[in-house]
Amino acid sequence: SQDDAAVETAEEAVELPEADINELCRDMSKMACYLTGELTATSEDYKLLENMNKLTCLKYMEMKDIAGNISRNLK
Image (tube, rainbow, N blue to C red):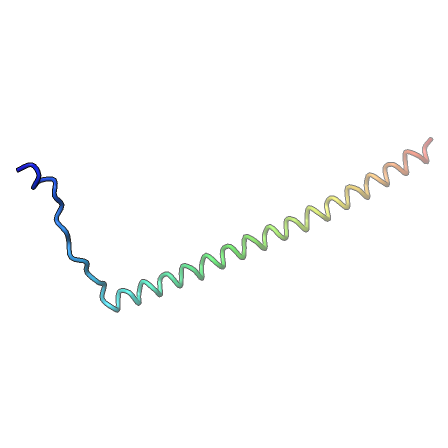
């Protein structure tokens, strides 16, 4: 009958062998270590860019003050 066709058959849950689970755990640990390193490097890059931007901003303010002083002295 059609009802029988709509019924799904259950499959027995099979546990992975201990060696496979250990290997998956090692792989996950390696992936976590890799991602931590990548994120740390990216964070350090952004800190460097932030510091460079702060220094650039200070230099531009210094140049603005110098240009203002020159302009006042020429009047």
